[in-house]
Image (tube, rainbow, N blue to C red):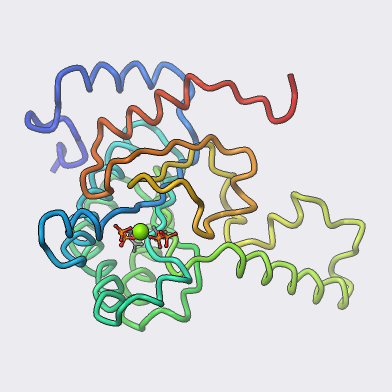
Length: 258
Ligand code: IPE
Ligand code: IPE
Ligand code: MG
């Protein structure tokens, strides 16, 4: 059991990767990394497989990257798994995606518990099928006191809806006197968002060559460093993750200053 979270099994340690990981740990590791996991469908298509085969393969990559993020001391790993717009997809694909959390957590939860990982979720949970809610809810409950990496699933998440809901709540709170207009700072508004318990992401990774946000964390990404790759999510591995963090460490963040 001890070596389970160890990503350094022989076949998974291409030359130099271990050294690069140690090197990364010498410097500032991004505290919150967000990933738009894209390209599952194209990965499957290239292999003449059904799109859902790509989603299944992609799930395995989440495990690998979670292990490495935990070992690197990353505080939060947010993975965009399903957007509020993804309901437009064929029912069969949506049904499959809604079953993935159960499969993922069914086999991975004991390891997450053992490795002190906390499972969280952002998104409209009550609109998910009951079985999906149950699986995610159970994982959240059973890991709520863990203090290692937070693995945060963005599931049925949409940033514009999130912002509008925040605005609606602010209006209500102003009306009822809980909040005054003058107190509505950026920090205060952040506390009205689903991400209220998280710091803004330091690093955003998007796979599959798409250079867009697709309604992901529009408010939270204001000063995040972006890293894009053509690699399709099911092909994404530890080396790509390390490459993204190395790129991050080479950036100079100015936040508008000099
Ligand atoms: C990302 O892969 C997973 C989800 C959006 C659920 P896609 O399914 O979008 O894959 P492509 O973009 O069609 O290749
Ligand atoms: C974004 O990917 C959503 C997730 C990765 C869950 P999409 O594949 O839905 O984004 P678009 O449609 O290409 O913008
Ligand atoms: Mg896509």
